[in-house]
Image (tube, rainbow, N blue to C red):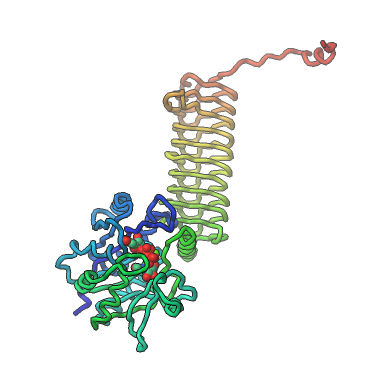
Amino acid sequence: MSETKPVVALIMAAGKSTRMKSRTPKVLHRVAGRAVVDYIVQAAQEGCGVQRTIAIVGHEADRVREYLTSRWGEDMGFALQSPQNGTGHAVMQAEPLLQGFDGDVLTLAGDTPLVTSDVLRSLLEHHRISGATATVLTAVMENPGAYGRVVRTPAGAVARIVEAKDATAEEKAIGEINTSIYCFRSEPLFRALARIRPENAQGEYYLTDVIALLAADGERVEAVVSPDPAVVMGVNTRSELAIAADAVRRRTNKRLMLSGVTIIDPANTYIDVEVAIGPDTVIYPGCVIEGATTIGSDCVIGPHTHLVDCALGDDVRCEHSKANLVEMADHSRVGPFAHLRPGTSLAEEAKIGSFVELKKATVGRDVHISHLTYAGDVTIGDNSNIGGGTITCNFDGRKKNPTTIGSNVFVGSNNTLVAPVTIGDGAYTAAGSVITEDVPADALALGRARQVVKEGWAAERRDRPECS
Ligand code: UD1
Ligand code: CA
C-alpha cells in the first residue's frame, strides 16, 4: 500500500556558504564541470521516481534559481528562504508548495555531491517497507568531525541528532553521523517543524530536531547506514570541494576505462563528468577534458592537452594543444602546440601543426596548416596548403574582416593575408607575399619586392678602411 505513495525531492540550497569564503554560493561551485547541487538533483531524479523537485533557495537566490532552471528546466520548483535561519527553517519554506500533498518528502542537502542514486533508492525503499514516519541516512566515520551525531537508545532506536557544536564530549565520541539526507512523511514532518525552536549554539532552526520530536511522539524513526561513508560527505570548504571533485573524477575515469577507453595515468587525467569518449581512444597524462566535450573512438589525446566543449570524431590525434569550442572531424591531426579558439572546425584529415593559432576558422578536408600560423575569421577549402609563417591580418583596428581561401590553394610560406581578401580555387601565392588584393582562381600572386643582388658588395665592404 505505502509503496504507491508519491515522493517529492526537496533540496536545501539556501545556505550562506560562509566556510567557502566565496562570492559564489557553495551549491554553484564546480565539481568536475557541474555545479555541486546538480549531482544530488540528478541522483534524486534517477533513482527514486520523484514527481517533483523543489529547491529551497535564499543566499544569492536569483543566481541559484536561474542556474537550476537552465539546467533542469521549468519543472523545477522553488521556495525562497529569507533570511537563512537553518536547515529546519529551510524546509518550512516548502510547506505552502506541499499543501495537500500526501506522500514522502525526500529531503536532501544541496552540498552532498557524491551521493548515488542507489543510496537514495535504498533509503526510500527502507522507509516504505518499514512504514516509518522518518528515515535518516547515516554513516559511520572514524573521524566524524563537524557532522551531527546520531544518538540511539540502549535498544538501538534513533532518539535524536545532536550537532557537533552542541554535543557533549560523550556525544562527540559517537561515530554515527547524520548525512542531511532524509525521507519524511509529509504531514508529520511539517507538524513537527512547527514545534522546533532555535535554542542551540547557532541560534538556528535545525531540521535535525524534528527527529527527536517524532521519536518522542512515538513515531517510527528509522536509520539506514550508508555502506560507504565517503559518498555522503558534505562540501563545506574548498578543501572538501577538491576532495569531492577528485572522487567524481575517479568515478568518471573508471567508468570510461570500463567502457573501453585507455587512460594511461588516471591520477593525472582530469575529465569532466559529462565528457563522452569512444572505445579504443587513448588518453595520455596531463589532459584536462572539460564541459560537453565528446571524443570518438580510436583517438589519441595528449599528453598535455586541454579541451573545452569540443567535438572530436574518430581517429583524431591532438597532442600538447588547447582547444575551446572546436570541432575536429575524423582523422584530423592537431599539434603539438596548437591553440584552437572558438568557432573553429576542422574537416576530415585536416592537419594543424606546431604553433598554429586558429580562431573562427572553417578548415576544409585534408588542409595542412603545419607551422607557425595565425588564421582568424577564415574559410579554407579542401586540399589547400597554408605555408609556415602565414598570418591573416583580420583586424583593421576597428573590426574583424574575413579571409576566404578556396580549395586546392597553395599559400606560400610567410604570407601576410590582409583581410578582407579572397584567394580563388587552385591559386598560388608566392612565399613572402603580402596579399592585399583578391587572387583569381588558378592565378599566381606575387606580393613582394623583387630581389636585388649586388655582386661583390660584401667583399668590397670587408676591404674598406674603417672610418672613425
Ligand atoms: C548539516 C546537519 C548535520 C549533518 C550535515 C551533513 C543540520 C542542523 N545539521 O550540517 O547534522 O551532519 O549537514 O552534511 O541540519 N541550508 C539552507 N538554509 C539554511 C542553512 C542551510 O538551505 O538556513 C542548506 C545549505 O545550503 C546546505 C544544506 O542546507 O546545502 C546543509 O547546510 P550546512 O550549513 O552545510 O549544514 P551542516 O553544518 O553541514
Ligand atoms: Ca554541509
